Length: 257
Image (cartoon, rainbow, N blue to C red):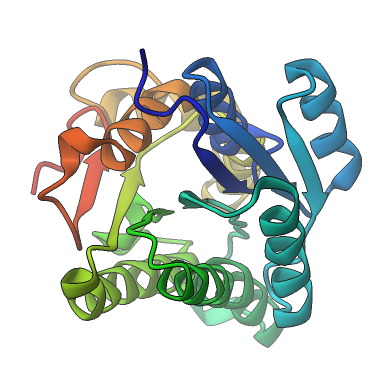
């Protein structure tokens, strides 16, 4: 029997892309998954697909009141939270000298502040419940090495890794583990938008951009959301019981340190 049977697992940004793959992976393991997403209709559709054991809700990870209300609803429905996958994220693309304040704030508010708020509120629940819970944050390859045309996105994901390390050190004595995954070039709706943007900025076609991603990946293919989800599952498992504060590359070899 899977160790996740009956566990309360919350996935933010859980209705599409990497988040949906994480949601499906834990659901297949018998977990009681909760899909939290800004797009409540999409979250509801995935919950309906998965069946009665799935719960869903709307969340704006930029807003403390929204995050608190969403997590309170999960705790009331599930009796608690055992695992948080703080996955919600966004991107925009522009040359650094042309970035607007809105570009910067949007990426920072969702990717960095969103992880901070979700982590802090769930950690408070863990501590109050004396629950040795687990958190897995979604960072990025761009949180390990600065990405041209994504400087603001890179900055937000570097912040996720710094936060993950610091929080892990603080909470290790309480038995609470916090790690992060760093995906590479993942086939998602976000990537479909990015290859169009990058193509325009670099005078390339979207297909040429995608092929460059494949060329940069030693394992020779575009990463799939499920490639990330299985690593998230491992980090949440007892097999990773002595791992905390890590930013695990899931990049097909693009980054090896």
